[in-house]
Image 1 (spheres, helix red, strand yellow):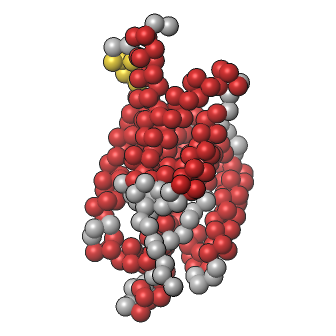
Image 2 (image 1 turned 60 degrees about the vertical axis):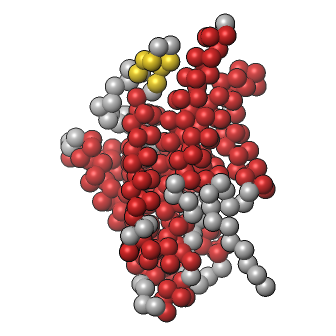
Image 3 (image 1 turned 180 degrees about the horizontal axis):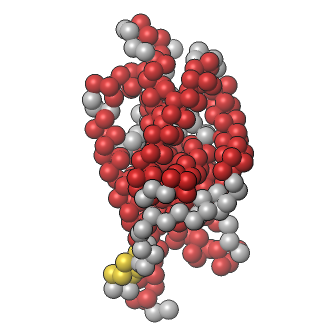
Length: 299
């Protein structure tokens, strides 16, 4: 491959990697919303994305609605699932040690991974969004259309939630995350705020699940996007909505470029390794991520 060909090859890998990273950011956004609103690290977000994908497929298959209409109906359904999770499981854990709340979310992840495919079928099921499979051609560079649409949706949702957290209700959500007891003391319904954050996270998960389902089919494996989403959320900062965009671009680009060159040598599997290394290095070097709020406790 000549120098120009190598340049276009790397550029194509970088652009498509950045766009796929924005798709990971869409998954990570749900986890960040819960953390920013309730200070809970949600390890069940991948399973919620899978649930959202199955919900959209089920509505399309059963009610025969156009997929984008089905997606909005599914958002309402999974919003209710998120609220239900908070009401049944998380509300009982308020005031309990943080590690126990984390274990609850891990248990929810395992439960949803097993239960949803049992109810809906193992799959994989095709989910047609109507987005053409033909790539966009820019000279010698081919761009995946689904990644481009997904990345655009991720950008829109991030901008929306950046605005939301500046509104009165968004400030209430942030106050709950800072201090449950102080929020109760000033009359804030902590339970309602936490439940709302889980509901919104579920609705965002439907969007992410629908897009990922259209790419790889709808089955349990969509839940595996959790690893990439954690890499994005941790790198960007668990409480930074805007941070998921830059972190998603970085994670997706590094993953795509490194795997393209290293996979042929080692036989594959470096995509997940890149995400794991990013998580490891970020926690060691910069625990609060690129844009996360650093909390200094004085004693």
